Length: 604
Image 1 (cartoon, helix red, strand yellow):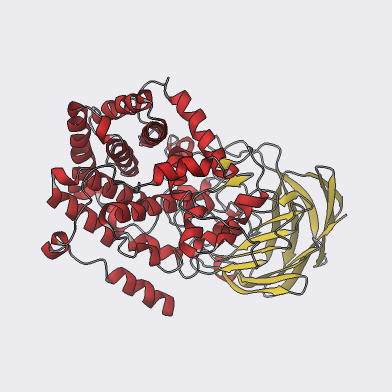
Image 2 (cartoon, rainbow, N blue to C red; image 1 turned 90 degrees about the horizontal axis):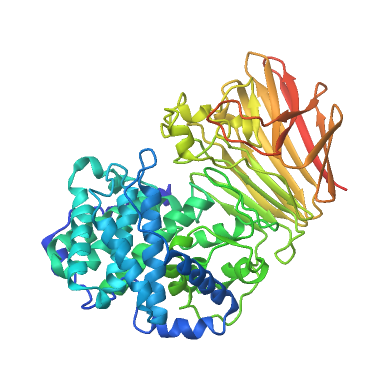
């Protein structure tokens, strides 16, 4: 209740009409660049990359990418389904990389290449405002290129590019049908508002009144999206969408700071800065992430944006994985198209030492509550368990309440199926964005509960609006214990409680205690894995992978049956699932009766 009041007051203090007094007090920095870049940033970055091997690795990645981009043709206005987003993103990649390279080297070939890209995008009939993310990223792309290269752009190019920012970016919001992102409580709000603010800052002197109105309107809208971080940092849309939404959130904050001298305290939203701990905890010792919702299991993932959070928090321990555990040269960077922007922010942190995180258990509350435990931060062989409660009603969510991933001895044994390409489903006419019980979204194999590491009862889908609460999460002497009340997601159960108990040596016990309503229930305990699986008997399954072995033993009910379920795509719109399978333990519960199933994970 207190969290809701705090978030409401935080939103209320911003979500009020823009006044003339607001605009009068808004003064934008004279001259360019003014978006994100501060005086001395480039010179300092040159020094930093000469001594810091991690940041130099990012710089070298930018150099390699930029050299390839020099020879690429400018983008054309070609949509993929309803989206122009891939085009907007390639333009953003071009402008950030080539503008950065010009600033770092003075090589005019990079400036001219970015100029060509911006002029081509400026000639598009529009930037596809019906899918406004496309406009948000394209406006950010031209704003950064225009601002960072302002002094070397020809007057004619400045006029064309700035007019495109105004007409196809800022003024695209005048159509009421394009304004939904202002009230969105997810990444659309962050991306679109960030792009528009950067656009307004870039062309501020050309139309100061309109630019001021846009900046203040976005600032007043943005806290709606930030509410999702509360109370302590869980991002409901998951790992990949934190990277997406939060990167643009940081770009918004830093653009306001560099141009206006104020962030309007946007970084003080409840849970926002704490979400850095959420992101660090989400990466397991194997390098694979807890990829709930629409997210793939990114291996050896790297997140340089955490440098910015470390600076804001005054806590460099959030960089422990980034600086001590990831494998050099093998990592992926989700926000690679704006890596130059992130690197500029990262180099501002004065790194003296990076201590190991002090916690083993991280428990995040909120719309998608999660609990994550790691036996040791210093070993890739550590035991790792990440589990979730939550609801399928949230943007990008799956029917995965009660699900988990599990690492032991350097192997991820229990995996999440991950996302699949949206276009593959949309071109089949599926409405995957409707969040109702009968939505097409739940026809997708990877999205409904039958493909997740949770329970399925009578082959029915989970109740979409049901919320499974983590009622307990605590660290024990040599492990952890967590409980999830899954009752609200089942229509045929009177009660359902799932209890996880993990020991540091890798032994895991999952206990499900269920009570049926007035009909018999067929219960399936499911776990997605890429291990080789062999059923030894009705209650025992052996898993082997990478030279390691683990046993799963089920007990409790007298009618448990073990089997292996193939992950063959059931429909043409379902993606191939590679060599994965699902371990299944099945049992029956008589009407109005209770039953228990305990599944123990025993590493050899």
